[in-house]
Image (cartoon, rainbow, N blue to C red; front, top):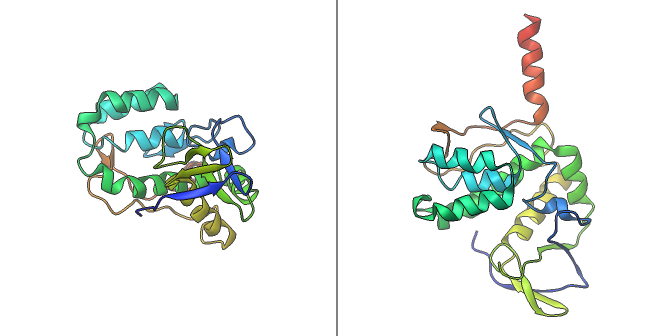
Amino acid sequence: MNPSIGEYNTREIITFAKTENKFGGLSNMAPGYSLFINEVNIQSSEILYQACRFPLFPTIQKEIIETKNPMDAKAVGRKYQQFRRQDWDSVKFKVMKWCLEVKLIQNFDTFSELLLSTGEKTIVEFSKKDTIWGASPLNPSILKGKNALGRLLMELREKVKSNMITKETVILEPQIKAFLLYDNPIKEVHNDNYFIDDLDDIHAH
């Protein structure tokens, strides 16, 4: 994925920025969409994404995950910028796509409903500074940027509509080297009920 810069008319699109607004749940910062990876509870997709920047440094990952606050997690990530994956700029879109797929299947009912409620409209993350993941105001009615996050969300929306991703879908890890959490490879990810059913099976025997 190497998104081109686009211009978006604010009257024709759906934007999100603050997490408490109508479409705020589309943001990676949104609370209420917790994740469970390799037996680790993670508060939000933003925190998971930040942790993925430092696969060879489990102590940094731990510090990020234990913040339980996406803004704090970003700040920790900035603090350790020199230790991030050397190939980060070339793999970050793949990692974000995976984070969003995990957010979807582990919060399927609420997140799929939110995605589908956007209809056919273009989804754009409104940001005054970030023109890679979002788009910034060019004037009162036009936003300009690569809008990579909005594009990934629209791609995910299409997969929900066509049943390419359902609650039962198993999300496979992105094909990149050293995809690790706390020194352990991250493998396939299941929905949030999978582990409960699994435990029931264990206790039944």
